[in-house]
Image (cartoon, rainbow, N blue to C red; front, side, top):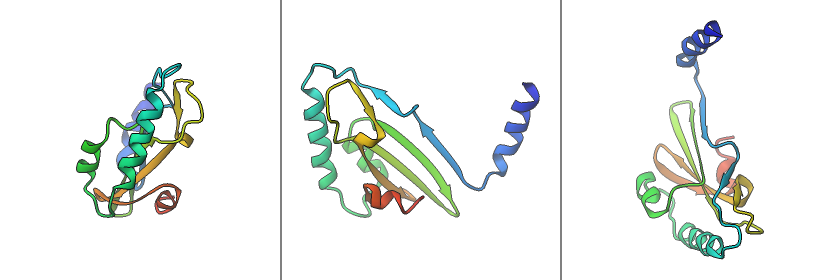
Length: 123
Protein backbone atom coordinates (compact mmCIF):
# COMPACT_ATOMS: atom_id res chain seq x y z
CA UNK A 1 0.00 0.00 0.00
CA UNK A 2 2.83 2.41 0.89
CA UNK A 3 4.53 1.65 -2.44
CA UNK A 4 1.31 2.45 -4.31
CA UNK A 5 0.94 5.78 -2.52
CA UNK A 6 4.57 6.66 -3.23
CA UNK A 7 4.19 5.81 -6.92
CA UNK A 8 1.00 7.89 -7.12
CA UNK A 9 2.69 10.85 -5.43
CA UNK A 10 5.69 10.68 -7.75
CA UNK A 11 3.64 10.22 -10.94
CA UNK A 12 1.15 13.02 -10.32
CA UNK A 13 3.49 15.91 -11.30
CA UNK A 14 4.23 14.13 -14.59
CA UNK A 15 0.63 14.24 -15.79
CA UNK A 16 0.03 16.61 -18.69
CA UNK A 17 -3.75 16.56 -18.43
CA UNK A 18 -5.53 16.26 -15.14
CA UNK A 19 -9.19 16.12 -14.19
CA UNK A 20 -10.39 16.96 -10.72
CA UNK A 21 -14.04 16.16 -10.09
CA UNK A 22 -15.78 16.89 -6.82
CA UNK A 23 -18.65 14.49 -5.94
CA UNK A 24 -19.57 10.89 -6.54
CA UNK A 25 -22.14 11.70 -9.21
CA UNK A 26 -25.09 12.51 -6.99
CA UNK A 27 -25.79 15.35 -4.58
CA UNK A 28 -28.37 15.04 -1.82
CA UNK A 29 -30.22 18.35 -1.37
CA UNK A 30 -32.91 16.95 0.93
CA UNK A 31 -35.56 18.63 -1.26
CA UNK A 32 -38.00 15.70 -1.02
CA UNK A 33 -41.51 16.93 -0.49
CA UNK A 34 -40.64 20.61 -0.90
CA UNK A 35 -41.26 22.98 -3.79
CA UNK A 36 -37.96 24.77 -3.06
CA UNK A 37 -36.12 22.69 -5.67
CA UNK A 38 -38.36 24.00 -8.43
CA UNK A 39 -37.76 27.60 -7.41
CA UNK A 40 -34.01 27.07 -7.13
CA UNK A 41 -33.79 25.42 -10.54
CA UNK A 42 -35.94 28.08 -12.18
CA UNK A 43 -33.67 30.72 -10.63
CA UNK A 44 -30.59 28.87 -11.99
CA UNK A 45 -32.10 28.75 -15.50
CA UNK A 46 -32.86 32.49 -15.38
CA UNK A 47 -29.32 33.33 -14.25
CA UNK A 48 -27.78 31.10 -16.93
CA UNK A 49 -29.89 32.74 -19.64
CA UNK A 50 -28.41 36.12 -18.69
CA UNK A 51 -24.76 35.03 -18.99
CA UNK A 52 -22.51 36.38 -21.72
CA UNK A 53 -19.54 34.77 -23.41
CA UNK A 54 -16.37 36.00 -21.76
CA UNK A 55 -17.94 36.44 -18.32
CA UNK A 56 -15.39 36.13 -15.52
CA UNK A 57 -15.34 32.84 -13.56
CA UNK A 58 -15.34 34.48 -10.13
CA UNK A 59 -18.16 36.87 -11.05
CA UNK A 60 -20.32 33.99 -12.28
CA UNK A 61 -19.50 31.91 -9.21
CA UNK A 62 -20.53 34.82 -6.97
CA UNK A 63 -23.82 35.17 -8.89
CA UNK A 64 -24.91 31.60 -8.12
CA UNK A 65 -25.10 29.53 -4.98
CA UNK A 66 -22.61 26.69 -4.55
CA UNK A 67 -22.42 24.53 -7.70
CA UNK A 68 -23.89 21.04 -7.50
CA UNK A 69 -20.77 19.65 -9.18
CA UNK A 70 -17.44 21.07 -10.31
CA UNK A 71 -14.69 19.86 -12.60
CA UNK A 72 -11.25 21.19 -13.43
CA UNK A 73 -9.24 20.11 -16.47
CA UNK A 74 -5.88 21.22 -17.83
CA UNK A 75 -5.61 20.65 -21.56
CA UNK A 76 -2.45 21.88 -23.21
CA UNK A 77 -1.74 25.39 -21.92
CA UNK A 78 -5.38 26.07 -20.97
CA UNK A 79 -7.32 25.38 -17.80
CA UNK A 80 -10.99 24.50 -18.11
CA UNK A 81 -13.39 24.82 -15.19
CA UNK A 82 -16.91 23.43 -15.29
CA UNK A 83 -19.63 24.42 -12.85
CA UNK A 84 -22.82 22.34 -12.85
CA UNK A 85 -26.07 23.84 -11.60
CA UNK A 86 -29.35 21.94 -11.20
CA UNK A 87 -31.79 23.15 -13.85
CA UNK A 88 -34.00 20.27 -14.95
CA UNK A 89 -34.90 17.72 -12.26
CA UNK A 90 -37.93 15.66 -13.10
CA UNK A 91 -39.11 14.94 -9.55
CA UNK A 92 -38.37 15.99 -5.99
CA UNK A 93 -36.46 12.97 -4.72
CA UNK A 94 -33.95 15.26 -3.00
CA UNK A 95 -31.05 14.07 -5.15
CA UNK A 96 -29.45 15.81 -8.11
CA UNK A 97 -27.36 14.07 -10.76
CA UNK A 98 -25.25 15.66 -13.50
CA UNK A 99 -27.84 14.87 -16.15
CA UNK A 100 -30.23 17.18 -14.24
CA UNK A 101 -27.71 20.03 -14.37
CA UNK A 102 -26.48 22.56 -16.92
CA UNK A 103 -22.69 22.79 -17.19
CA UNK A 104 -21.05 26.24 -17.41
CA UNK A 105 -17.67 25.90 -19.15
CA UNK A 106 -14.79 28.31 -18.56
CA UNK A 107 -11.47 28.42 -20.37
CA UNK A 108 -8.75 30.28 -18.51
CA UNK A 109 -11.38 31.80 -16.16
CA UNK A 110 -13.59 33.13 -19.00
CA UNK A 111 -16.99 31.65 -19.90
CA UNK A 112 -16.88 29.95 -23.31
CA UNK A 113 -20.41 28.55 -23.16
CA UNK A 114 -22.86 26.33 -21.35
CA UNK A 115 -24.66 23.08 -22.02
CA UNK A 116 -23.56 20.01 -23.96
CA UNK A 117 -22.21 22.03 -26.90
CA UNK A 118 -19.78 23.83 -24.60
CA UNK A 119 -18.76 20.55 -22.96
CA UNK A 120 -17.76 19.20 -26.37
CA UNK A 121 -14.98 21.82 -26.40
CA UNK A 122 -13.09 19.99 -23.66
CA UNK A 123 -13.93 16.36 -24.43
